[in-house]
Structures are given as C-alpha cells and as structure tokens.
Length: 179
View 1 (spheres, helix red, strand yellow):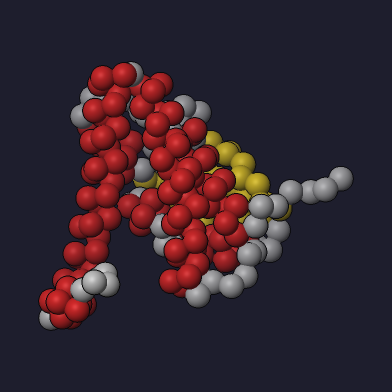
View 2 (cartoon, one colour):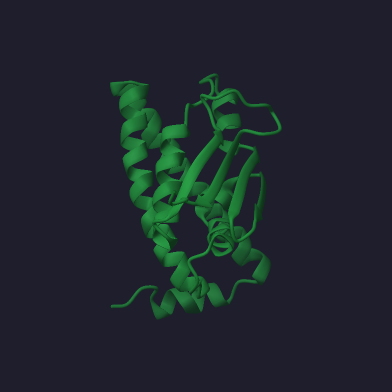
C-alpha cells in the first residue's frame, strides 16, 4: 500500500485551503513538541549534556534527510547559496520559528531567528535558555552539505552565545575559499 493512501488524500481534499494550512502547521508544532518532550525526558534522566549530544546527532541526520526531500519536492536543481536559503525557509525548523529573516547572494547567505519559539517556551516553563548551538550547527551543516560540500556554515551567534530578545541566532553560509 502506498502512502499517503487514496483514502487520506480523499479525506484531506475535502478540507478548505485554510483548514489544510491549519492542519499542516498543527503537525509542524507537534513535531517540535515531540522533539521537546523527548529532549526533556533524556535531560531529566541523563542530564543536559547527554540530551544535547543525542539531540545533535538526531538533527544532523535530519538535516541531510530534510534537504534531500525538500530539494526533490520543490524541484531545486542548483546547489547554490540562494537555493539553499530558499529551501531552508521550508524546513520544519524555519516554519516553526515565529520571527525569522534571511538574505542571499551567490557568495553568501544569512538566516536569523529573531523570535525563537523553543527558547521562549523553555523560559516560560522555568527551564532557562537551551544551549542549542551544537544541535543547530550540525543540522545546518548537514543540510548545506546536501547542496554543496563546499558550503560552510558559520555561527555568528546562537545560545549559549550572548543574544538579544530580538536576535536569538544568526547563521552565515558561504563557499569555502581554497587559498
């Protein structure tokens, strides 16, 4: 049996475009809820360091998978930085973020999270800021590697680095120079 099933498609086709978007974003939120819940469970049992290492390995693999599938889905053929940034904006991570900005040229791309839903949720729950730099860098490096292994990812800031309420993390993508 193929997936999605004909019955699933028939059921979903009866929903309005607005309801389909609501359903889609509900599932994006649920993906991040599961991520947070399993992280908290590991953190509670084994500590933040172990949870972070496990999370980083998961997201490193996810970066590769998500880039490959999004490139196919979106019909992305080029391996340049503008295409990478365009595709990155379609990831579950980017879609989950309330505030984000990006820019891209052939030489360099920037992706910023200006309002981080994950961090704000942790703070509201009294858990403090999560040092997500290791996790996010692995995800972004493997994501970029699916486009071009010559693209390097530079973290300009990401917790535990200092940040402001208006800029949680900032990532730069550029082709490695061969000097």
